[in-house]
Image 1 (cartoon, rainbow, N blue to C red):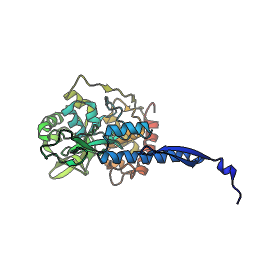
Image 2: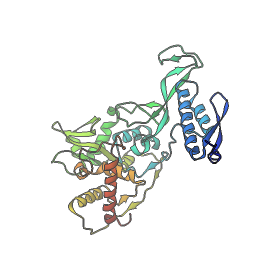
Image 3: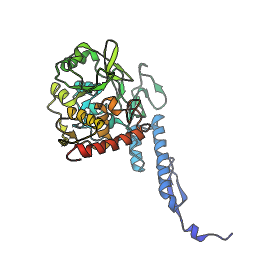
Image 4: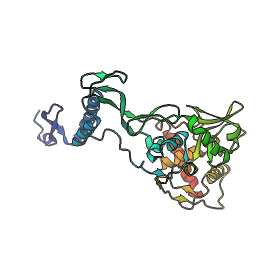
Length: 351
């Protein structure tokens, strides 16, 4: 077979720096150059992460090398969390507790799903090393040159009675509920802080929780229901959240800024079918000044699902909405978004 000079012209030589410092030349098809570089970058990232895991590098050293080799950053860049976003109209118990304890916007964002979703951080582990061996935290004395061990971790949803990894990689805990819940509950009972939740059973249809229920009902925490209210041993509201502006008014801090959000005014006198009208009426009760102009739409939809009661969501989420795996809910999420777009095209003056 004759040599194909035309095919040879389609090859290019690439120089690659190996971890040991050697430089090798590789011949790579031109059309695969991008894939080649992406593959090398991915391999380099994995190598750097493993070198941190084995305590050969610190996270800062690994990030610097990743930047030099154009294969970083390794940990996620946490952006837009230095201000309270007015889009976060209803806070979970964890968000509220974080604010009460720290009075810092980033502390609240850590527990807000759109802010922590798919974020990776260098977790500072409880163990230490000196380059030759690992030390457990209770081993005393430790050599003077020990350094913390780290691992790259994906941030997870938090729970009020458990420790969690923060944006800075440190393991932290909430204030004990006994320390802040009595005062918070008093604000809820008086109506100074407005709360919403997913109603359970035929006796409760509105997502708005009457202040008097906080006087007679019992609250609790569970993985399935989040913060819930029960009456006569039956859950009546689950996934309870608090109006953020009310929380900020009761627990103020003048140093903290809130990033403003535009509101889209409701259109008056529109005619909708019964189900769409119920959705719009529920949202108008929660947002009388207009619907916040949430961006992007996945944030808007997350907020809407937080305040719409389960019966109004059943068309898209017959088994209820558990905000854990967005990939598993991709189809219903897309269908819900399109349905909301159609409703708001009629219900809002500007969309």
